[in-house]
Length: 337
Image 1 (tube, helix red, strand yellow):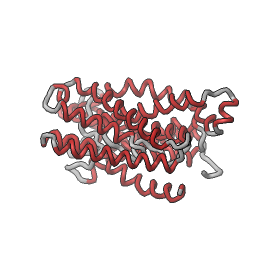
Image 2 (tube, rainbow, N blue to C red; image 1 turned 180 degrees about the vertical axis):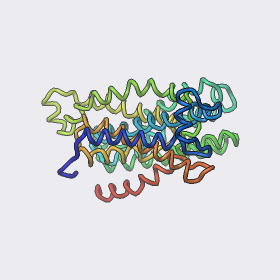
Image 3 (spheres, rainbow, N blue to C red; image 1 turned 60 degrees about the horizontal axis):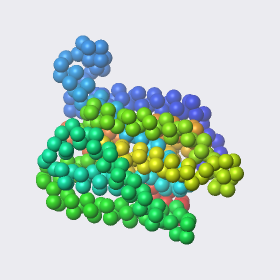
Image 4 (tube, helix red, strand yellow; image 1 turned 60 degrees about the vertical axis):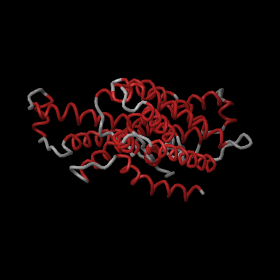
């Protein structure tokens, strides 16, 4: 951790400006190019029907979804790293994303072809299904990683990797038995893609984040106290076991609902908190809101890049994020071992 950190307000405002710039670029990224003047005219109701359809039904929902999912996944990673005091903790690496994904694909497998998978009900059932899988994965990882009442960072990491491999094996078996159309849909979704985002998915995700994100920011002081150690935290009146369970619940819930609509997005919850701590230090009252903003920018920028780099085809945003995150993960692993 560098001894000198940057001013929080300046970095936060700069990140918001970068998000705004990414929104402007993302609006005009894709096969159909819309001049900025036409974009402004469309926003005030004077654009053509084609431009209104492109902006309001395709690009804006995707932009909003990328921002929301980026915020949720990044905050989940920051909370997991704070609670476990493990710099390698990430919902993707620890198997939480894989558990949520496995539950969603199981749901798709058993209800393929029915209204529960193709109708509006699936939009609201998928987050609950993903939550079930995420909590199951988190329970298994922390239970198996515990040895003599202690959990070491490396043991937690290895259990997460092993559990992810087990879930992925189950996913392959299920996918081979799915109909071709559902197989393609599941494969694209698991790669981490928000290409099918619409306002229904936004409204399904938004209530969860409206509750969980402010709650996580409110508990930032508890995360700071937990960094002092269990004895010191108990000495100032913090109920350590209860607070850890509550924070883990929030982290797993954030990851689960975001995976339900955004697919498998590994390493985003790893790199965003690390970038934040290098910029403004480890204090969670500053770290958490900036982590959410940086995560939103990274995912939005990655989604825009995925639409441009292979136009008119698209590269799943999860692959772009993994390309950025894998080298940094290896670097952290070398430092930690």
